[in-house]
Image (cartoon, rainbow, N blue to C red):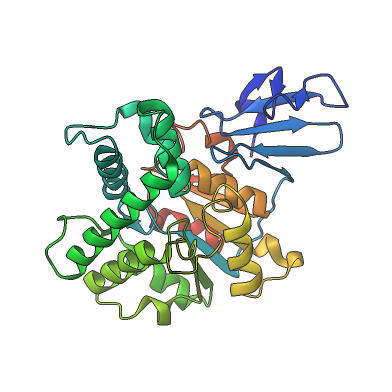
Length: 317
């Protein structure tokens, strides 16, 4: 993490912070302006903005890592399975149906804002830009209907071709971690009903059996709230908030706070990198996602082009 690489601003946290006031030495923000950092003489705070009206402030410390790792925390979309284009297409399809324009398409500039965060954040961004008169509840209902249909089509063998492709050498990488007795946690901001078909599909392709049996822990963003059903917390507290990674390590893998230096996270998105940082772990930023486009490279501790490049870092070789 090197905050000096981020853009310096005079006011942050939606006006709550002023540079030079209340002990704040400087304020910096990420390239996508989703997170502001207030730097004091003795501490650093991070303000996570919210399109849903629920921002949060977290303490930030410089994480440490001591190989070899005891646990590796891995993102799903873009890191373990290449599916970002599919989920961006789902967002586009949902907005297209919402505004009743079958020719609607997202722009290149939208990409950092429609991947890596929660579904509601993605939809809220699109509504604000393309159809301010609409509401996120209607968009979310359409999104889940489109998702349910498309996921069923994929599981039945009729779905969008190439929707879920295992990352290159995913199987070899995972088996190497197992050979070295390293615990593996899969962490995703995706809801259960979209995340599990992804990893199940990838494991089927690789002939690796049941991912639930393979991983030491899988944490998703839970279940969506819907009429006649019970939802779980997943829209307001996913990445870039720390809780998915924190729960995977502490609850799922049993790693106590005093062993954080033996844990490392792998991500391809700016939201995921920030989530790992706020949870107190060192991160490896994988190429191919929106880390660079979102200006979050400064928040990574290491960079790698592909999964197998991570092994020397993890093992300390």
